[in-house]
Length: 427
Image (cartoon, rainbow, N blue to C red):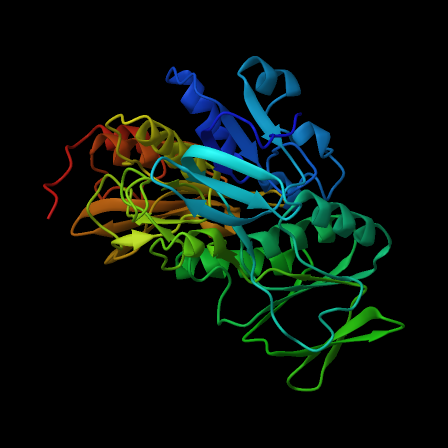
């Protein structure tokens, strides 16, 4: 790794050493760009995969070094200047480009700018949040601290019943910890999956010995000698805990975008080309609020997606846009979550559905929930059903139909139903 210098020839500056940032840089080179590229981030690590942090990393199955996207040789061979440990605090634009300034005072000139600043954990200002043992999980440093604490902990409390919280809870329980999940909403992962899928995960985690409390109201974290010892609820109950993980969502990092006067609204507002409101800056990944990329017409108009697939595909479009190429982000969004031996794969976006079809028996821990609108399939939650996931994703991508009337018949592979009928006209 090298350091950008104040006299560097201005080229593309990518702020954010993450999945999207690496993809922007590598795609620029793949598309033939020969201008300088500087990829800068504040973490001490080379860019790495984040999803395993809540799963394999905490279980000791992988190391931080094994999660890196690219070797140092890759950056050298592709003349991508990788800069770590530099937090960009100011960005200004000129007629021909601009300049970014790091907290250290180092300056980074640019002619083209990509913001891949990602997101940061949503903080909750409860009394006791500063106690040792109260953790968040977003980066490798936080994951390393949490992994060390989990080794000696007996009681673990997870605040938040979303994907990250449930993944950590499942891993901790598999390691023999006493685990409680506190969810403020009336169901788990309620914003992402159907009621059927939520109900399944509630029962599945309880079967595995995790205590799940819905409609939970945390009052404060209690401790002794500056170390957390428990979580107090509104009814006066105090749950013992040597480790508390707070997983209540993330907030997009928009500070630099605001400095530049870019439009922001739950992220940096971009168009289908990943282009921000100034018409020259691109943004991609968790920080970007974009038009619904689904190739179907259903769902919300704009959204911010937190997924590897989105970061990669949107970053490819952003790179093309920087080079003046005609590119547009249209795809089928997909996601996954590994919770112990339960693998959830989601294809499409279920917003706006008017029909839900259950395929299989949740009691077998292998089933799919299919979402329809106007007779068209628009999404699916697939639990331990990878073939269903692939079939739905392919159907959405090619515009074919999966008739709801026969989708419940598990004796017929879903892929055969996909090819049985063309899609209905989009409304």
